Length: 166
Image 1 (cartoon, rainbow, N blue to C red):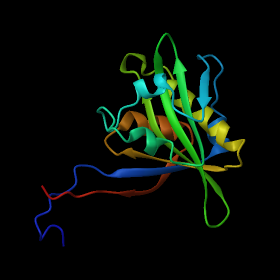
Image 2: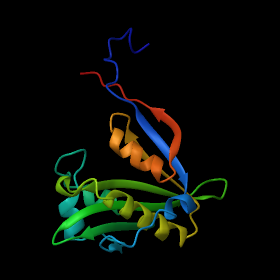
Image 3: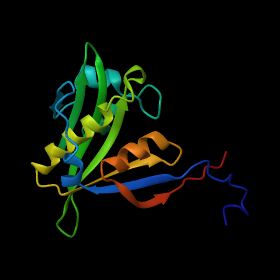
């Protein structure tokens, strides 16, 4: 129907990946700088955060803190080099889920395990709050991130795509 209406085809799919948090936390490392966790994003976390690759909009902070059970993870090595956000929520069937967003690593610090490091820290935080499973979203064009998520135990649950009329 969208083809007939001349909506351009999507450029990529978004994958929704899920994992048991026990599997994710099994990859915890102690040979990297510590991960700091806080209920609010501080100036260091916000300095490292980009919204879809650009400067966050003015209302970004209010959206980021709009969860009852949340954490903001940051690794600092003279400057913030890796961040992630986690939020725990209850599913209708009674399971507690961790949603992982805003995973970013300074480009000069990539391929050192820092993304996995902040994710496992957030997963441990969520487990201590009763979460058993986690989910995240990633573009199907981000092969490096997908490989890292798979190493942590994430598998594809489903995918979706957007179409936009220009």
